[in-house]
Length: 162
Image (tube, rainbow, N blue to C red; front, top):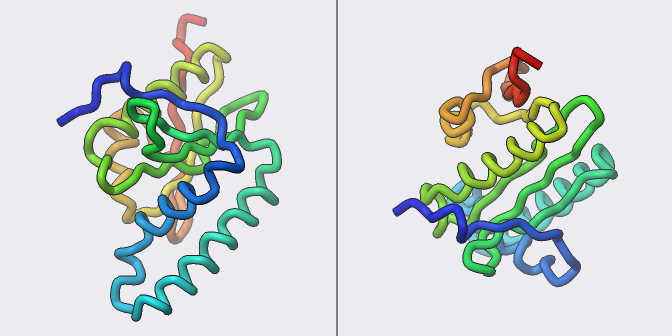
């Protein structure tokens, strides 16, 4: 069942969200480490989470960390970095129990409206076999480049008559 738009909101990440964002990362990484023993899963997940957090903070020190809320309960995370000439979608993650319910679509619509109000495109990078690729294409993102593992994508939010 699709989630009604009014039930989705974004709020700034706070220190109180640390446990949630760790649980979110673990929940979305379980399949990657399913073949390992539980203690190995925990060690590798913690290492990967810390590496990702360090990488994001070094590469995008001005990034905005937001919690996606469903009916005022944390359901995911959005990380964006607004530049003067475009908005960069760094990461969007939704709890597995809420995936395929329209939450990510709604959050992307919010992000696109914000970018449209600034008259800038939204850019992102996605791993080539990530299921989210189909979501991005369906919403209107187009591939603008590729590496061996990732696609670079962009969506224009301004109209040609501007």
